[in-house]
Length: 324
Ligand code: RIB
Ligand code: CA
Image 1 (cartoon, rainbow, N blue to C red):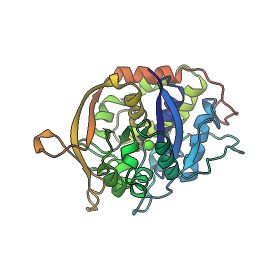
Image 2 (cartoon, rainbow, N blue to C red; image 1 turned 120 degrees about the vertical axis):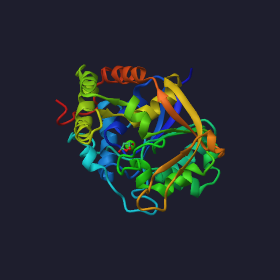
Image 3 (cartoon, rainbow, N blue to C red; image 1 turned 180 degrees about the vertical axis):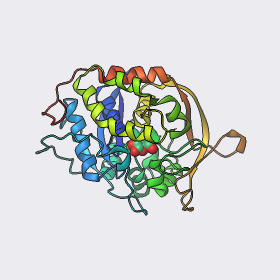
């Protein structure tokens, strides 16, 4: 099975970093580019987190990092710094000449898919601003994407940034709706609830076992994720949450998916109360599906995948202050 060519569109913090590590080190992945979108934490911090992640894997400068949309389409940017801190646990490195690609992320998405129509998959694990902008700039873009995997929304379940909305769909609900209406030939959605909360949230003892190997990746993982698990436990989420890495994992390892179904998915862009809320209509409602929503994954298989990833020995390209 040849590696899967993939682009990761990300608001790089915490589990976004784990996703990049999986894209770099999983033998089934051929990570072609990283495209940055406004989301979790300050944009420049996100970009630094992306280079830091490449660096810890010993791959600094080996995957192009394209800077994308620095704000949602219509809304004011809202951060999740209360959840993630700076997204990398205060780690730092010499970023001298750790340069970003010249090309804007949206232009890179359009070019790369035009150069290889029907071959590239995109894993979108932040607000969908870049993806939606590519759709609006070129209405043939969606048809050129082999598969789009999106971390977003909840399957008729609780939100996280509000009672009804998940963060990625909440930050840029208009972008989410543009993407949902764009006619991507294969759109798969990994939702927050119930899926992430049940199958991709690891309680403190499981979390500690993930970084027990003490490799550079394991130490990096702990520094990135400590702030988030502390926050999550403080708000009643029972552990370290990994929806982004699960999104890439289901592309690379489809055998992890135990249940999924076609749904018509839409996002509320009107009401202040339920802004960003996802409506996921299952077959009963007779709507034409626009996405496959993953309903259940092999939790222990996903956990084992992360454990194996973090145990991988790597030699950081440059020293990382604070990594120990
Ligand atoms: O709601 C979960 C999403 O927002 C993930 O992409 C994670 O990065 C969080 O910030
Ligand atoms: Ca994310």
